[in-house]
Amino acid sequence: MTFPALALRSAIVADAAAIADVFARCLPDAWTEGMIRDSLLHGCRGLLAESAGGRLEGVVLIQPVPPEAEILQVAVPPDLRRRGLGRRLVRGALSLAASGGAESVFLEVRPTNASALALYLAEGFAQVGRRRAYYRNGEDALLLRRSVRYALPGPAPVR
Image (cartoon, rainbow, N blue to C red; front, side, top):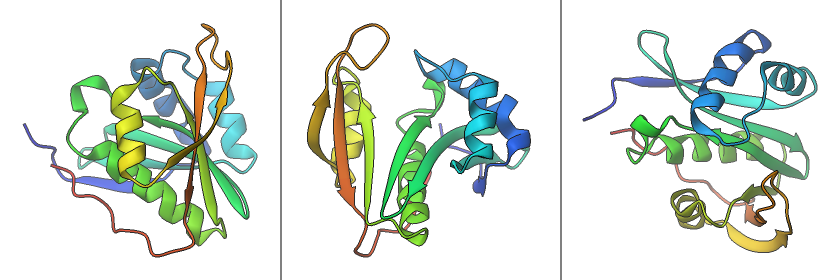
């Protein structure tokens, strides 16, 4: 199965409910609509992947704090995974961070989330730390970092 044409666009505060819906379908500790709205109001940036019909298919949220940025959340619903959309969102976030003056991008990932960890490592992130008992269930988080001072690859094709 392939994706219909998808477009990336910037998130706005009015997207908070739709983003929360995607998060609820994707993430074990999903952010609420209020948390998303507050984040967008206070400097968080987001990229949304939308189908031609306007359906939200994926989200990445990033907090720029130059010379660094942090990828806060990447969410692609389970039925749409393993087709390049997560990679496209991560690359979009890296470009967004670099254009905003970031030199490094950080993120946390569960060590048990093998597919996300593999994606991040393939995109040039490296483990720089570990946050003990970071998640609500007591699971650690791996702290990853990637430099964005150099040319970034273009967006990954969505298949």
